[in-house]
Length: 416
Image: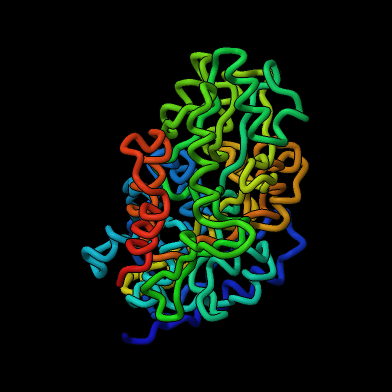
């Protein structure tokens, strides 16, 4: 891949570092190159972001255009693209895809391996500005390849204080009991392996990416150790048998919150505003509870995740695309993202603000972070785990041998 000229971008980033005492870390004016031409260049960029971020990104882009109006004329086109499947859209036509794009951190390794991303210039400054976990999530082999955007792509417990006390939400047993007693539900999506990880994550059973970066290892079917795979399966069957349990996706969870049928559920910060509107003063959030497994209480785990901004290595306006990525992720715009979208900043200063610290959802996510890990698994993980957990959610209606089901799941997860 041909090398990119970073000189102007490096100069701008260096100036930004010198302005660290200003109100925000917005980038300074970019000096124009001495081309001997009086006319400003025209910069065409395509920006991909989540559909629900359109209003926010439009505002950020407009500010960017105003800030650099002396240096160039901009045609910046926004196109909605889901962060969770951004990788697939990029790989379909990399050289014709977006110049700047938002994506989930678990796609980073693939994008780097495909040559879609180049190392970020001024990585030291960006690393210093952002939380350690976000920097790790944006790096491969210690090299920063993307710009950290949020530090909130995880999950925790929402609960209605009208029905549940702070003590109740410490254990799943109490939550399910309260839900059943009130003829209401505690919701969790067992069709998603992302959430189902919570039952295996703190048991000593393991899953992860092998050194080849392609295949997974998984011991969720282990028959050794203090907690065996079959112990987790039995615990899940016990949970699903409770009249207070409701296996439903994120849309169903929110609908239940709004109609009053759901009094607790596992979800993320993207639902914080809607849950607050539905429950008002009864709105509560906490880390995930413990659950009963192998005769003991085990803290439910979670995957932690981060949203990142990438710059297409094939962008014809790589310099300006990099500046736009830097602008979208600066302190001021991460704070704006929190105010408008309720998303937790990865920027250290923005994350330390009083408004962020006072958010119940962000506080719960931070508390849960002690029991979470980065999601580093290949695509073979999702379907086998989902197939297994849906059978557990249905109560194993065919009465299949649990160890056989666990073995089949692991076989699928670890397949080449």
